[in-house]
Image (tube, rainbow, N blue to C red; front, side, top):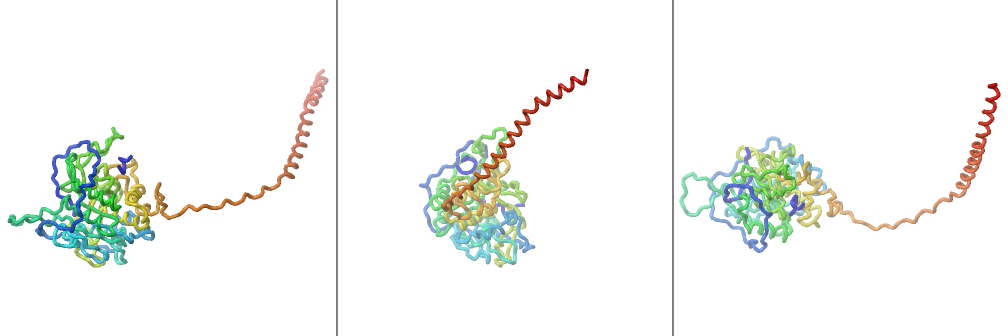
Length: 462
């Protein structure tokens, strides 16, 4: 296992996939296993018959456009961009769709599992916020920019909390949407993204939570394994939010009385696909002070953390260059959904700067350069808060030098001719000999002087 074992109010906390939750109790579970033979086939995105039953999410524009958002300042992205901007990378965003926006000039339609679209419609506003954090280009009119502003986004709409399926039956007037998207369509979307030409990173800000011991979708596990191991793609997933309906039951923190116990022995809730630790970089959320956010779901699979509060990103309702929002449906934007794209953007920065690194090496570099908590790995923030600047510059054990330096054999110069010290040595020896003779003469005179002094003393005393 990677990590320690190898060893909105929340306006928009995240998109929870449809699953059934039972009573959560702590049980000892092994890390997930993968059956590669269960990977779904790559087919054109398609979904069930759906309809829009609720109004699309509303947003409010940012007041101070010049202000650099707190997460961007905390990660010191200004110091990273002279070294890497993510150029040449394509990040697949599997989410609620991404609206076309002037700050995402390279947006690629990837398909729609929710409705009859191409992936560039976002009624929920969630996917556009995620994509903006990853790759919104820089603009002199605003302080906000994405982590990897020259990367491209592939948008695949896979879920929505506002659409609902229709099956021909007449519904009660005013019935709200139940949401569209499940682990089956997520698996299909991952396979589709993995086979899309040029994709090097996949961001999944969606979580399905199930009680420990209830099992998981073999198809989903096979899909993330296919993307990470076969297609060499960095797969980043949100750890999940405790305040979402699907993930209310938290896993317990480490027991100080049993410091060496495996955290897999006390799991109550599985958050998927985050729990596929060997294939996925699972990201928790921290507050501006670096402390774990109260809503972040802990677990033995959490690898790193990133800012998940005070979020500003692209406004799906205002596509102009200054179209930014930090409020959806009247509430602030926060959640592990928005911590994950900071890590995904960092992965794009690394892959652009070090194209020779494979997906595993990129994930290891993010973990090894994170700001580790005082007690080492922990289930809330993993190996610590990501540091994009360190991730693209630090010397990481076993990794290629970040500066691309090569060892070069150099000729050893001839040793210089040693100086002739013989005259000096003779002179020093001579002086030493004379000093020795004088010393011996002085010592020999001591008994005679003492005797004469004694004799003189006895005569005067009579």
